[in-house]
Structure formats: structure tokens, C-alpha cells
Image (cartoon, rainbow, N blue to C red; front, side, top):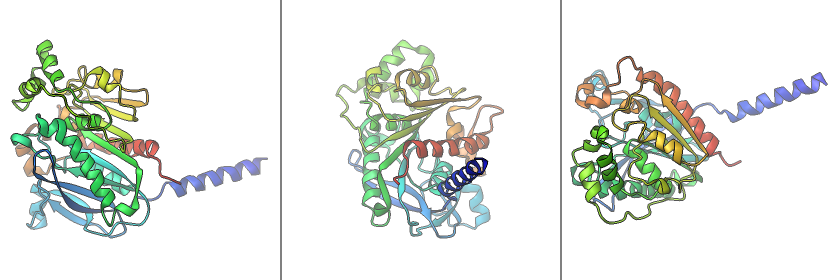
Length: 348
């Protein structure tokens, strides 16, 4: 009997090893998509599995090549070990769209995108268009962002190289801050931006959020018309990072039924935990995982900035005193990949 048990253990170990495939090399390229709300073109960064060998790629915030010697690019541009414009590997891929926060950029979560692509996903990160000069509020956010996600899913599925490799039932979203709003809206929560104005009138202690970007409360309160339903049923799981939860009623949030992993930053002074993450944890469906990161700030979820860009990035590059942003990302990125592996399992 002991021999039978031993053989069974060995077989299970071999199966597990076969399923835990080694990480892929990562390819990178850029898409351009037309936004139907602002009329602008927006860029989408794509990371995907490839067999091609990676080399250092240095990009600016606008996804343009650095164009300077590597020793200088390392100080002022974003470095990624990728195979630029390489052919995708064989196999079947899931898709994860990564939506940045207001004022952010497509490369905000590039380390997570690399981790996802290395484990068999296509990661797509848009540079959300800025209607009226900002991407904090207005229809460019409330309607535009969710529609941009839908256009990205369409574009990847229709891509001649990636499309045939996509498993279309395996689509997820990661959203930070206003990207969290985007993920919730796409997952089925009908937006009600006027709820922000009501919140701000009732909670003078939330002055930072209510004045952020200079227009958030005014535009959200003034907008009288209903927001159309922007749900995309292709999205099957979402991850929220310090999300903006205020543009939704409780009833709207209860419509979200997809699995959720929710991260909050303990020392977030922009999307205060008590008004955003804790409310979501109480209201969202049972299939959700809630993690509070001790000592983290709102922007701790953004990947590290190059040395000479930190002063220009301002608060997006700063953490509460004593907090280790790199350590957070080293732990969190595999957790997020694991969440999507569990909730968006590959077809057998």
C-alpha cells in the first residue's frame, strides 16, 4: 500500500509540475484605437508571451522609444526586458486589461503586465484619453473609459496574430483609482456620478478626494443625465487597487457578480479606505477577496519611476515614510496572477 501511495504522490507532483509551466519570454507592441467619446486616438501597450529573446526596451511615458544611449535612458525612461514586435508564442492566452488612475499612463503597472504575460496572458494597458484636458471626471471617464475597455477587447480578439490564440471566456480587468471605477462599471455596476456630489456635501472630512483634479465634484454633481449601461459580459474577473467607489449606489454595486480581488492602502489619503474599499467589501458579492496593505499610500500600487522622473512625477512617486513599494509589488504581482489563474482557468 505504501508503494501505491508513493507512486500516487509522484504522479501528482509530475502533473503539478507540468501545469506550472515555466515563465514565457515577453513580447511588446503598441496599438492605436479611436475613442468614440472624445474623438481622440489612444495608445494601448500590449505585452504577450513569445519565444523570442528579450532585450532592454526604454520607453517614454507616451510609449515612444527613448532614443538616447542606454546609460541615459535608464535615468529618464521606463525599462522593460521584452522582445519588441516579436511574434506571439503558440498556445492559448487569457486577456487582462489594466486601467490606470486619473492623470496616469499606460506604463503605470508595467511590472504587473510583464508578470501576467510571462504566465500566459495578454496584458493590455491603455493611455486613457483626457476629455477636456483631464481624465479625472466628465464623460471621458464615466462613459469613455468603459467603452475604451470594450474596444481594446475587440481589438485584441480581432488581431490577426493574437486573436486566434485568445480564449475568449478568459477576460479580466485590473483597475487603480479611477481605473477601479472603470473595472466596476464594465463588470456591471451602473455609474451614478452625482453620488459623488452627495457624498462630498455629507462628508467635509473627505476634502482631498472632493477637490482632486479641481473638477471632480462640480462636474459629477452638475451632470444630470443618466449614464448608459456600459457593462461588458466578456469580463469574468476584476482586481481593484485603491479604487474610486463613489460614483456608484449600493444597489448598483450589488449588480456586480464576477469574482473580485480588492486591495486597499492603509494610509491612502485620496480614496479613503472607509469610504471606498470598506464600502466595497461590505457591498460586493461573496466571491471577493479583500486585502489591506499596511503602511501603503494611494500611489504605492504604481510601479517605480526612473530616478530623474521622480521629481516630475510628484506624489505618484512617493510613499508614506518607511514603506517599501518594491517589496509590495514583488508580493502582489504573483498574487494577482494567481487570482486570475484561479478565476479564469485555462480550457483543457
